[in-house]
Length: 345
Image (cartoon, one colour):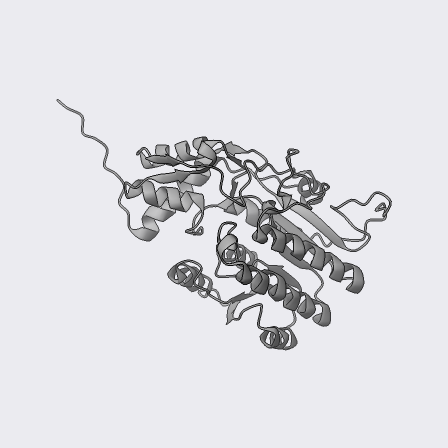
């Protein structure tokens, strides 16, 4: 298929593009290569993707309305996967305008492109952050999510509402993907695993929020990509059982669906740090801090709908995932492995 992947130079976009190319698809990658984090990491991801003849790259910002119109007029796509966004919960507290411009205005331009060019299916990244103040575990797509606690989460909830509207009005098949704490090789430098690994190797303290009383549904990147790749062939249809008298947030009378993609096995933050320490062979110096604004104490994905639709459940253990990331980190940054201590006598 001809597939457009936005955010192709980003963490998830890079891995998904690579997987789609391996499956024999033609991929057009779009990214604005902003400087939210080290552009070299994005450029190195792109360099690997550009080694495929079936990959083409366009430097373009979703918020560029005219540029997006030209893109959809020039090319025909059988699938569009939107992974471009201004990411980061804490960053959204300091730079709110960036989230509206990229995540809301930019997404509108993408929806318009899909609508006017008759794209057969749109898949778009949402986030576990939309669950906000919800405390009933595991988080289900069939629960209401009307209490976000960061602008990032609100922008992702807005994406879901916008996509549903276009699905209903224009019969655009749309699938929202709620990702849960994605980690792995080529990950984002602002994420916990990257920050912790770098600090421990450099002998610097790590910040442990909520005094360590956090749980996250850490999901390895390959499991995320597998879920998305399988959903490319699962075009949603209208749900004939949907009722406005008892509206189900997870389905619709429009061709629209939501899916959680998470490991469905929450890990305590201190156990996560322990897995990093074990792999590095080095203890972390910890600075315990209170829960930060916009953060939630726990996440836990109900993935029953994903399994029913595509027969897939993430499988990667935290130990294996952390080990693979640290191996990549050492290789990418040229950090040598510690030599084992010599035995005496």
